Length: 408
Image (cartoon, rainbow, N blue to C red; front, top):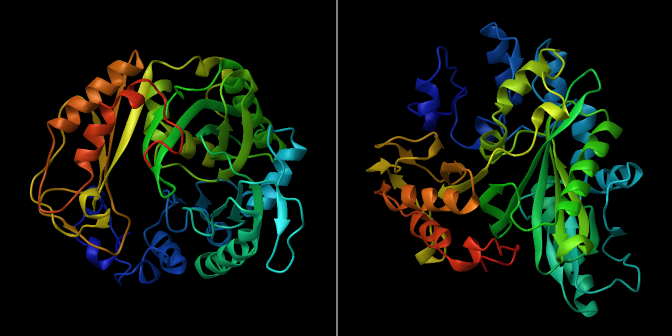
């Protein structure tokens, strides 16, 4: 399916049948669940794969797909609903024995005393950093809760917020899980997504370069326990924040993404598995073709960077226009929906491409990535390419010393 601005997009040319949704904005096109279902039925489709944006975590859309007699490629609507609510997901995680810190339910005008500082105010719904506030002084808590609730209500239609401990120099580590309708669940190792700007991931790698083996095992076991606890089906990601070093690190369960992640290629690179193929097999009712022993240890190290149409030299302002040259250097996997001559509009996400390298050791993967980036040519719009080149050669990055505060 495609919107009006995407009429000549790469994804439209790549398929046998493409259906116009009309409109330019997401609300007029990719968020029109009714039009997507109608297109699927008219063209004789069996299933709907929601990708990883727009309606991917919308339980009502998932239910509408199923009600229309189509197969939904993802977890059940009930699982999306439960795990999409961060408070309900946290309770489920505690019940399942997942390692985590506690959360405190708050609301404007109803804030308990004695909340330890620094604290993080978060929205129960949604993601992407909206409805999130760091509070360092108790006196700032009232305004932070009110502001976060307002922003969450505006962005997600749900102003519910909660408070959890804020880990200053933590790592954002997430575990890829896959479950089927027959009760089988496996983890496919973890990814480290700590290099972020305003809660948007810039660099992702697998496995994580900075957690102790005992902590890694706790994360894997916790993710699988939670998935089993809710009978999870299809692809999902269990996200954690890990604070401190060594075996005594603090583990905070963050949320579950009930969909394929943007950064799934690094997991594919270290497992040799095609995650979308697994999604389709599970959705078709097949049992998982692998068990945990068949997954095995990671096969080397993979690093992904996100090339975005934002200009770091101009305060990271979004950059739009016509792509001139668009060539990524050799030796990397490139996942993109753009070609030279394409228009980069302001209607959709600024992600232009994901660039992934894999090697036996982390430093080899980083060198290969730096080479591919240095020999890339992107003209016509501003991008973060120079920033990515700098990160790949920076001493702390090469040493794996990359907490969530790294980029700042």
